[in-house]
Image (cartoon, rainbow, N blue to C red; front, side, top):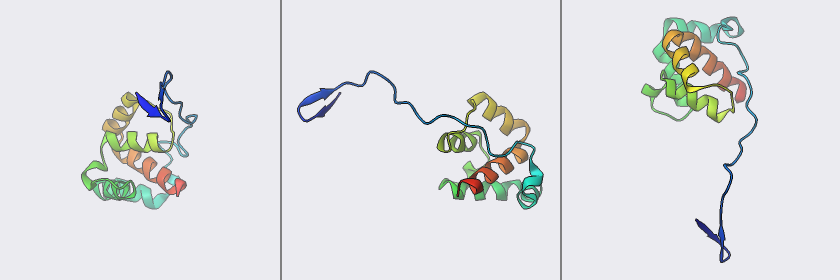
Length: 107
């Protein structure tokens, strides 16, 4: 319990975050940025490191489900942990390309 000016402050509701939205580009929208698409397809680890660098994280975290979840949370994108895991496990290059396009859009 926090104190403010001598009165106890009781939080009874969880703070509400901004309304969730969709990704700016689709998972398979590779033609939206062919350069990112080629990097994701031919040098997946390099794209993962670029993403991690953009998010101020360790390079090894760039290709993880946690990175997708971090980007979704930071940019208020709707989704679930299960969806993040499935997308990362079964469509890693497409997932990384979508994340990188989202980061570029937000800049």
